Amino acid sequence: MAINSTAPPSALPPDTPMLVHPVYLAGRGESEPIYDALCDTRGWGKAITATGLMFTSGCQSVHVAYLPEHLHGGWKITQYREPLGMPAWSARFTENTPAEITAAFTTALADHLGSEHRDYAPGGPKYLATGPSKVLAGRGWTHTSNALYQYLHAPDGHAYFSTREYDLDEDEELAGEGPAQWTMYGCVDKAGGERWHATFTSGTPLSLVTRTALALSNPEPVERRLGAIPVRNLPYVTARPANVPAARTTRTQPVTSPALPSPAPGHPPASTPSHHR
Image (cartoon, rainbow, N blue to C red; front, side):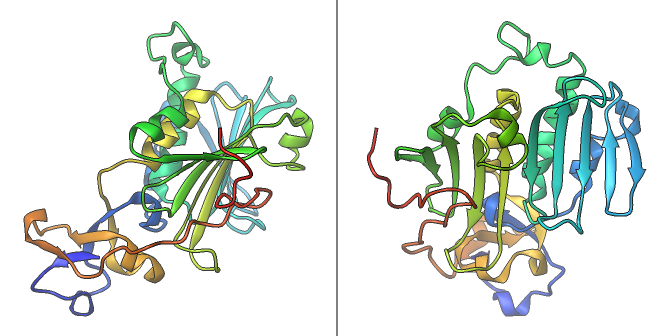
């Protein structure tokens, strides 16, 4: 953990604003950026329910639910083929997913709906001529694979992005009866502790997944209160008080030989691929 060399971590109060990197180990953070994309000025409606919050797009075809009391907690986003129709795709973010990662998805989604995704399709003015895997590879994430999944691992080994390599019935996937097409995951080790994951079914517009991957691998630090950074993550992050220039910081504990994170439910171990492609 990098801090002001004149102030050891024990001397800093828990409410000290810190700049933290990488984002996937920074902790949950504040939820306001997630909500900002779903405001009424952008045509979204909001309802308070017995289990959380429900946001509905102006076109009535997308629901964003915040379900803190649900078994898995967090956020679930679903787009339907028509209002009250069959689902077309679904994405989930667990409760402790860093807010910047979830917000990247909701912000991109709100932008997409303005043109019914056409602006982001091939030939559209906002089309991204790349995918999430290429984005991560370009930022130094390393590739492994086995017969079932392709993986990209963060340089420190504490996050990964996986792509399912086999076909799954769409209805089963949407019902959660099999793994989603794409998964993001972050954790410092395999044995319990602070961890998060996000999943995206195969119908999710690729641009939404790509923009979320950009947030996952963002090299810029994010702001957290010192007390909000998961304690077990402190040895593996670089952090400094927000009012201290980076040149005045020093690393107090190096990152050494971190274990690869254990896969999200339904995934085979990423550290023991059966073959490489």
